[in-house]
Length: 343
Image 1 (tube, rainbow, N blue to C red):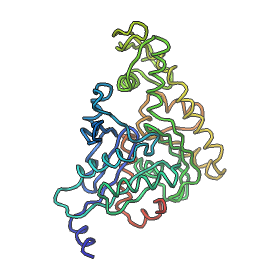
Image 2: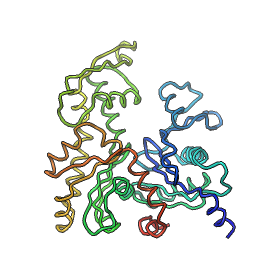
Image 3: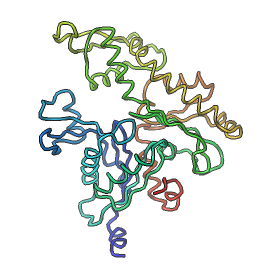
Image 4: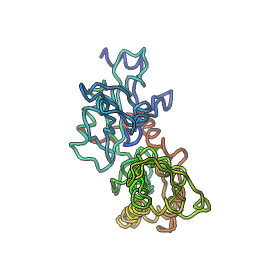
């Protein structure tokens, strides 16, 4: 009783989008208070935390042997439990109101295809980080809510959420997922594809930070005028072992991204093929909504529209759609119980 009264006096609930690439935190009344890379830097000797988030990302590829830079989440799920708990602890403490004497109730969006073991790992990590109670909701539902789709109505809404480690494709109706596919391909796979292309075609070794910069600067999923743009890329020559600079083009990088992009297109087609006829008719009228950081890849919406012959809409600020959706769920306890995974 005392804890409940304190929680009402000092609200501390928060919503998390625990992503492979970035973790975002939404606090009711304040909006998005934190948007940091999901990266932790630890001392190799005693595993103590040296840096988290942006400070840790700056160390990628630059740290000495005494420091290990870790991405604790892979393909949307926990790959390193201890590092995830430390990272969540840091983010939750950073986002909490310092005057609040109670532990927060935390709602986290997770991939729809997450296993029960993976679910338990996320819940335990958040609990150890100081959460009073932990709810997990499917990421497609969160992204659809954040994109402003009427998910509580009987009509079908199709969402394609392209994240750092996973692509979530789902048909949602009456607050539930009618059919979904969780593909463990996302922005990180695109970065890896660029690294492999530069290595094979130019004999140059580059890091993941630079691959991401190349993707943002000249990457695309469909031919465009900017394909003639060039970008200098610096790395280490694989034969001589010396630093070298090459030039890549937009068309070249688009071809490098072909495999992960086609995988996303195929999973969207597969989901449409499994959609009930009545709901398929709704999708023809409503189209498909793109969310997630991958939705920012130029030409992805146009390619999906050509392949599916359906209208494609990119959500406003697609990178934050999921965390905004989770924030909306926080305001309605009844709806939260309906959409959350069973404990």
